[in-house]
Image (cartoon, rainbow over the protein chains, first blue to last red):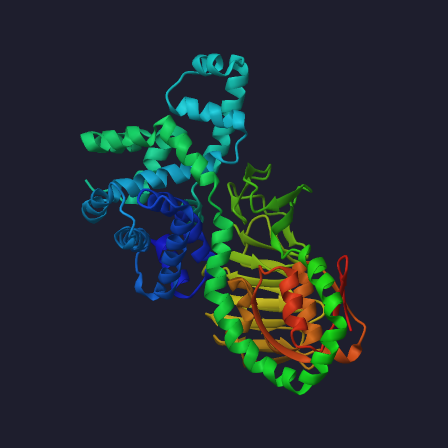
Length: 183
Length: 384
């Protein structure tokens, strides 16, 4: 695939513009993923930044985009696992947490974080009103139901929704967009 | 059945916030047949969970994190290594003088740092002048997607603008779009043929609405890095400062600021340069400088680290006169520089620092030598 090849070559050549795309794509899902295990934002921020630094130092080792992604998530997960093990303070659920970290198949967690980060990216620039409409409608509520809930006219809901969805479709995920440019 | 994660993420997202075609719906349905997948799908679209996540993500500062990562990669390590090696040569002989000077200036220095603090580094911003006469302001956060009357599709996301042709326009006369960055701006442009162009501050790129005919000719000023898509039978030509650069699918940097000689640096591939009298061909790692006395091009090995620094988000000056350094820095921070003491223009320095540092930090580095006293008034820097 041409797009992936270009990204990998760019990374290989030390192109920081492409590095930034990777960073922008995975930073939020990685933070959110780490928070599942370590509920401390300053620490998870460090773990995630360190994962990117190690990736950049070892950037010549990656031939596939998917291996970059799994490297990042695995690195962050290992940092979390080490932290939980090292922490002297006993959590009530520390044993459980370590067990979960060591055995759990994290694929579904990663997928969930990725979709959520993408939803966030898409709706964060919408007005609060448009956000609500989008969140209600993706829950499966019909336009009249949303209108009733938000105490707005049906026509307003329709207009807001139309405009919001136009923006959502234009806004692909960062890396997805980057890939799109090369296709 | 196997799915790549990226596709699956995309399917799930678009199943509620976009559209799926029949085939994609079928793929999603097949995936949803497994109970554990169904459970995950419902979890993903649970309103409470989403709202909680949104609130947490709102608190994540991706920009700050990126800056920290950049600083860790390029900043600290390099400044400490190179800066001191070169700077020592300048600083040591003047050390005593510097100490005396600093005592006098100590109080003023403080106010300078405060003043410099309000001056911010450049950002991703640009302006497009469309062939239709329309003007658009582009910023990193602007999400923009439109199709113009003449069938050009323009998308702007995350500091990137791409142009794509939806129809082949009539061939009678060529019409041009133009992208311009101001002082304190940079931008990334994707041309209709897929060629990528990074524009540095105070630069412009003019290109036809469609690349028809037997060549792709664009015009530029300022500084730009090109990653040209190869098209056999349709060479890519860059016109700048009276020089034509002929390209056959390659990566190269062109520096054509008015106050500096035109410099073309080749990273990979092959380019041919031509002005009125002369024609030279570069091989990767070489650069051609157009001599100001009219005697043509001087070809020499390039310092790629220095040339590519701006793309990597750093300033790298290798034993350069202060005048040159300040012009460069001024373009990025949008400040004017005035030398009260002309002698200092020729003083040479080597500096490496991230481009996203505050201006106060730049001043601090410069003042550290002890030879130079800097005073900031609004957007003008006085060097004494």
